[in-house]
Length: 393
View 1: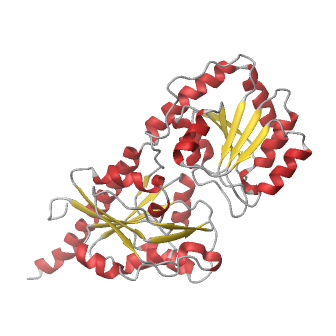
View 2: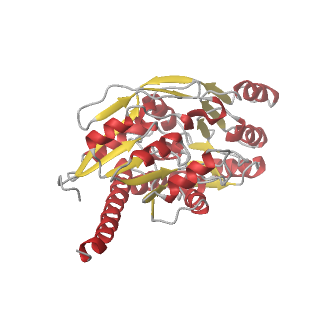
View 3: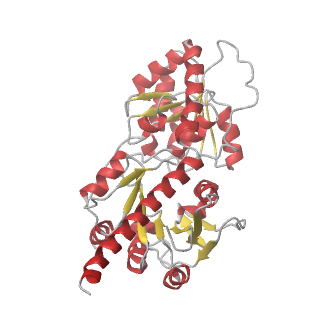
C-alpha cells in the first residue's frame, strides 16, 4: 500500500476515448475507497476512419486528455502513438502502479515502461494470435513483457501469446463489462404468435470475416421463414446486399447503419437470437465479442461460431456452431423455430451469464486485484534488494 494510504493507479488507455464501453469501467474502479485513480487518454483519436474527440467527463476521478503523436500511420495503425507530456505527468503523479490497456509491442507501452520510475506495471492484453512482428515491434514486445509485473488477460489464448513471448509472471483473467442501465431486458416481452418467424440479428462491422455470408446461406436453406436484421457498416456491405438479392431474401433480410448504444439495445431486444459467426483467418481470431454480452444483458441468447473466445463468452447463454458451416446453422435455426422452450431457457441463461461474469464491477475488481498484487510484489522486491546493503553496514 502506498504511503499516501490509497493505491494510486495511472491507467493509460486509448480505448477510453472512443466509447462509453471503454470508460464506464473506470467509474467503478474509482469508486473503491482505497484506490486513487488517474486516467490518461488521447484528446483526439482516429479509429476505423473516424476521428473522435474525447468527451467531457464528470469529476468522480481525474482524467488527463493529452495530445499524442503518430495517431495513425501506415499498416501499424494506432500502435505507433505516444504522449509527449507523459514524462512530466508521471513525475507529478508519482503512481504506485501504471495500468496499460495497450498491447505490449506498442510505442506507448515502451514509453510507459521507460518512464515508470518506482511504479509497478500492469498490462492488459487481448491479442490471441501468436505471430512474429516486424522490427522493431518484436523487440519492443520482448522488452516490455520481460519487465511487466502483472498481466490482465482477455482469454487463455491471449495468455498463451504473452507466455510464448517471454512473460513468466502472474496472470489475472479479465473480461469486458456491459452497461446494465442501457442493455437490459424489455419491461414486458410482447406476446409472440406461436409459429411467428424466428428473428435473428447481427450488430458489428460488415467485413467478410464476420461470417454473414454463412448466415445468408443458412437462411436461404431453412424450412422456416426466419428473418435477419443487420446493424452496422463496412466494406462488405455491397456484397451482402447483392447476395440478399441473388438468394431471394429481400423480404427476410434488412440492413441499417450504426446507431447509438440506446438504439442498439432497442434493436437487440427485438431479436430472438443474435448471430456472431466470425471466421478464423491468419489475422483474425475473435478476441472477445463485446456484442455477445450486450445481447445477453438484454436477455437475448447468442448463436456463435467456434472462433476464438466466442464459445467461452457465450457460455450457457446460447449455441455454438462450426465456422463456415451454413448447413449446421440452418439445422439449428429450424430446430429453434420448432422448440421455443429451448429459446426461452437460453434467454434466461444469457442474462445470468452476464450478471455472473461481465459486469463493470467485475472488471474493476480484476484491475484492482492485479494492481494490488503488482504493487505488493514490487515493494517486496525492493525490500529484498535493500537487505544486503543494511546487513553490510
